[in-house]
Image (cartoon, rainbow, N blue to C red; front, side, top):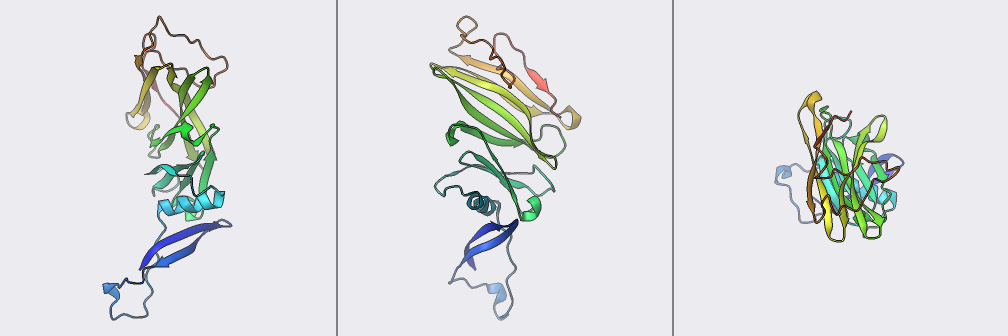
Amino acid sequence: PITSRTYAFDRGTLRLHAAEANRNYQDPALSGREGETPRAEKPTGSALIEAARADLGLSSSLPVRYEQSADIAEDNTPETLAIIGKRLIIAGPGFRGGNGYFSYEFGVNSPEDIVHLGAEDVDGDGKREIFVCLRQDLGQGVTRTILLIYRLSPRGFSQIHGREIARQYQGNSIVNRYRVAGSGKARRLIVSPGEAKGFSQENWPFGSIVGDPYAPLLLPWSSREERLRLE
């Protein structure tokens, strides 16, 4: 009966902002039962993301990127995650009672520097953590990719791990590989050196970055696989 619905957050409450009726719709289940009111439908995750976009004042021209569903917080109802512009947005019918959302803005130069969004359970508790990969410009034609892992809990939104997983320079690159394996307390983030293209032990031109807050890139000629227990 409804072609589309638009929702909006109003002072902490999600409200139906507009609905476009399908004038040609006839519900056969209600034939001969005039006066009955159709059951209200819950908003979809995508509709909640769009309501959050409007509430945040984000331009309608910004695309929704990496939208996906994952159980990351509160009850067992999956949340919807997406990137709009430089922001991560999390919403869902079971998240904050369906009347709120979470938003976090990454400190990147442009939205295109957010190159991955995913969700994996890294500690075996049944809730997934949020995986984000950001591209950083180190200057003089050098770029790297940072993997950041976040947890959303009643205590807040916290980064539990961060590391460099790729470096590119003049067409050469090293890309580490990572995966999550095991169950329960044996759950581990496994990071391996991966492969080098163009780089070797002899021509690797970089030293360590003083004061870098992230774990260093694993080098194929000198590093071993790491198996990390993240609490």
